[in-house]
Image (cartoon, rainbow, N blue to C red; front, side, top):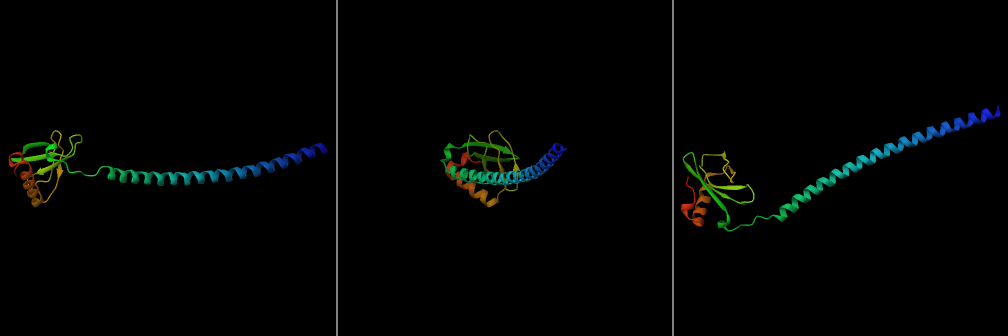
Length: 144
């Protein structure tokens, strides 16, 4: 009988210990979840700052340099009875700048290496064409 009572006491103390350990385990799980959430938030904040830093670095690394106009590739074509003159800013990229378009048009036209998209005030375009005519010679520049 004494042996049975000792066994019952041990079982009860073991059971109490198990309950205490389980509650401790639950607390640790909650702490771990909280730490994981904090870690994810910090990681997101870090990623956001990295993207901003990369953006800033890219802006700094690639300043706009005005090159000699002779290095540009040029393209001239007819569109709706008007001659359009396009100057490709960088032959390695697909970006291009339209130097003369009909004043009434706002357009998106694709042709070979040039993919211009422009909406500009008429006087700005006229001034730009005059400037290009002075630099390039009028025979190389499209007319409106």
